[in-house]
Every structure is written in structure tokens, then in C-alpha cells.
Amino acid sequence: MRLLRRLYRLYQPDEAAYDAAADAQTQERNGLTVRVAVPDPATAGRVFGVPVARRGVLPVWVSVRNDTAQPVRLQCVALDPDYFSPLEAAAVCHFSGLRRLLGYGLLAWLFLPVLGFLVFRLIVVRFANRKMDDVFRRLAFRLRPVPPGGEQAGYVYAHRTEGTRVLLIRLLTPSGPTDFEFTVQCRSLRADHLRRGVGDAPPDDPGPDLDAAAARAYLEGLPAATSDRRGRRTGDPVNLVLVGEFDTVLSVFSSGWDETEVISLASCWRTVRAFLTGAEYRYSPVSGLYLLGRTQDVALQRVRRTIHERLHLRLWRVPVRFRGRPVWVGQVSRDIGVRLTHRTWNLMTHRIDPDVDESRDYVVEHLMHLGRAEVAVYVGGVGACPADAPRRNLTGDPYHTDGQRAAVVLSDARTAPAFAAVLDPPPAAPPGLH
Image 1: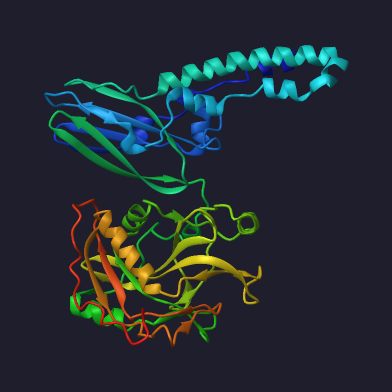
Image 2: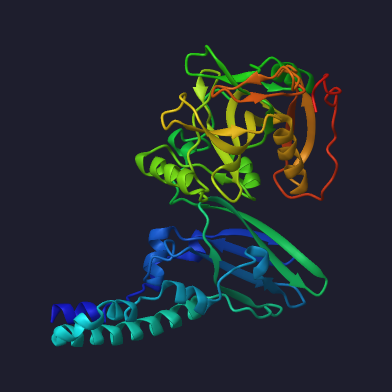
């Protein structure tokens, strides 16, 4: 009897397990009020009765209040061009009974009592899946205009990604679209920056607030490159500077970039497996490089088709501020393959593109394309080296550079694309640099 009761309780969602309205972020503009909330994986599992996060579904609760004189409509494709319909999201999470029943094949006929039990289970699964369909459909945001004075709320079923994510809520009106941006955390990822508590609280001594001249002198006086733990050998060049709060940095780079996991047995195994198969591992750990006596505070990456191709970005918080905002110095390079080496624990390393200036300038172009750069300038400090006389990083890869660092002041909100105000641009390439 206990087993029968468990079967009847196969699907038990708890729609009241999450108070989305109380947990929501709120923005108001031009008579429109938008609220957004994202339950953590465990809470979402209780609400929907199934582990939606493990099935790749991110339920985003959206509420739209329309206090204007014209109707508005939520554009879901702006939030996620490949969002799930309610029944599609439910189908991804369905229990599978028929597959298990067929898996027994002819052996099932030798155990008719067991076969009868499995048929009973199949019937229970069918009813549970129908109930799941109803729950996903009932909790969904209905795609219809919100009339003047009206309000609508519900879940949009987006594809799940780990780490920080920026959600674009676009409302269409007869007079044009109105956009709202929300930054949310999908925290099932053990991001490496969490081990330091970066961004949890301001440092005890944020450092002096520098003007433009003092900031340029400080940045040009920083080490030219990263190093090993003992500081005896130099590594990749320190070729990027960002100015902005930590939340702004994560928000800006959530578009196309991913946070990286801490180094653990599990993440190392996934990395090795991706190396051997050429598969994609978007959150693979990044090795530690040293600057100012410590490894990076934050590591981000932009992946291609496989783990062999990606951009690495490491950032260190430095003890100064510019216009009241934190300053981060970093190293960015592009991985274009893998090779064997005796200098790493797994005998493999990424091979970087020797033109590290291209990676640096790619980040500048990316930030300008997103409209998240107030100004970009170039400062010295790296030291130029031509392609025919390159320097080498810690794993022996050669690189050449014009010797400049790109410094970008980040914008807290999206702005119209504009050219960077480049001051003191890089000099002409040295002989042999191409």
C-alpha cells in the first residue's frame, strides 16, 4: 500500500513554494512597471515538481503593470530567442514510463506480475505528465496584450545558463518598444570568484580616487605581465583595464561570456573529457596566473565550438578608484588550439594566438557593440615587442604586442553605439609586427 501511495504521489508540485512577487526586482518607466524574479534551482524544483534546472529550463517570473493609455505586449524573443512554450517546457521535464517498460523486452513476459505493475506505473506516469502540462501552462505568462490599467504575471520558460545573466524585458507599444534590463544570478555554478567573495562587500581600504592624469601614471606603472607563484618568470601581458563596479562587470560580460568554475576533481574531469572529445565546456576552470602577489579575482571566458577555442579574461582588483568606481586590471588572450607540454599537471595546455593585441581590441569592440563603454583609451605599460622577436608566456607560447593597454570605463546601462574616444592611440607597429 505504501508503494501505491508513492505512485499516486509521483508528481506533487507546490506552486506556493516561491513568493515571486516578494523576491522580485522592480523597475518603473513611463507608466510601465516591470517586476522580474528567478527562483533558485531547488525552489524551482519544488514549484514545478520536477528538477527543471537539470532539464535546461530557466523559469523567469515576469509581471507587467500597464498604467498608460495604450496596450502593451511582452516580446518573449527579446528575453530568449529560443524560449520554451509552456507545453514544450513541460514535455522536456516529463516522466518516462513507456521507455522503461519497453526496455524490459521479452523478459517482461516471464514476470507477468511485474509486467502488470509496470503497466500500472505507466498509467500513473501518464496522468502525472498531464497534470504537469496543466501546471506549466497555468503558471506561464500569457502572450497577449496587457490593456490600459491592466496587469499580467507568469513564467517565461527560457534556456538555462549558469552564472550571471542579463534579462532583457521588452514591452511593445503602439509608440515603440520600451526596454528594461535586469541582472540575475543562476547560482548552481560554483564560480571561481565566489571563493574570494569578490563583490560581496567593499574592501576596507578602497584606495585613493585618482584623476585622469594620476590614473594614467598608475596604470602605466603596473607590471607589464603576469608571473608564476614566485614571481621569477613572466607570463601573459597585462593588456586590459576596466573601470566599474563588480556587478557592472558581470552584467556587461554576461552577454556571450561565461564565468568559470573552481578547480575541483569534477571540473578537472569535465575539462579532460572535453579536451579528449573536443566538446564544449562553457564553464571550464582557468589556471591561476599571478599579479600583485595573488591569482586573479575573476576569470571569464567566451567559448567557440569546442574547449580548444575560446577567449580567456582574468581580472584583478587594484587598490585605486577612478571617478569613485573600482579599477580592474586584466589579461586577455585567445586560445586557438591545444598542445602537449611538460609545464602543466595534465601535460596539455591551450595554444594562444600570438597577436594578443587582437584579443585586447576584440574586448573593446565587444563592449562598444553592446553600448556598455563610456570611453576607451590606450595607455602604455606593457612594452612593445615585434613578431620577429616575441616574448613568451609561462607555457612557452610566443606573443607580440604594440605595448599598450586598453582602458575602458564601463557604462551601468546600455547606451547607443558610438566610437570610442581614443586618446593617445597605439603607435605604429614596430618593424616585423603584422
